[in-house]
Amino acid sequence: MKTCDYCGRQNPADAIRCHECGSIEWKRPSESNATPSSNPFFEEPEPTFISTQGNATIIHCRTPVEAALVMKKFQAADILALVPAEHSNWQRAPGATGTLPIQVSTRALTADKELHDCVTFAYDPKTRAGHPLPSVMKIIAFLLPLLFPLGVFFFMIEASSFKNQGFQKRARDWARWFAIGMAAWATIITLMVIYAQCTLKPV
Picture (cartoon, rainbow, N blue to C red):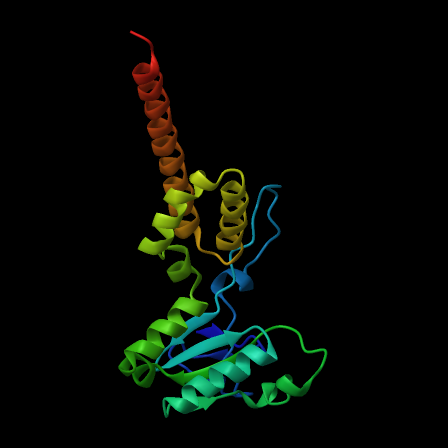
């Protein structure tokens, strides 16, 4: 059994919509038995913005603009997207809070690989966290130390941007290639200075 997050009705485990109110939002098992943690270092789990329940995939949009863009993408791909009745006026509410769930057929979404990859990449925190740094960005990170100190400033901005967007692997790769570049260019410049001193030394 699973509990509706909207009305609290108990539903069968394979239910897609609540039999009482029609909502597609379900309480997580941890929420029903949740107790405040006594650990001061306890961290809340990262919110999930995409989930699959039976034959339906649910995308939880964070803003009205974002919801409109997602709906347009599905319409362009001829994929029917549904918004629960209780959230139908959410886009027009200026003070709306929370997320707006958009439900689509999992089979239809999976069939369109490009759209599926785009949606998964944008909304699944695990997918974003494990996405590697593109080769072009690796080259840029390797060359940035040559632009010292401007290169360090640019490196810090991009590193912060990756972390804020949830690209943990990209942030690690960015830092690693920058460090490799620092070591490589420092070695090359040192060898060039030593070579120049040796060649200019009077016989």
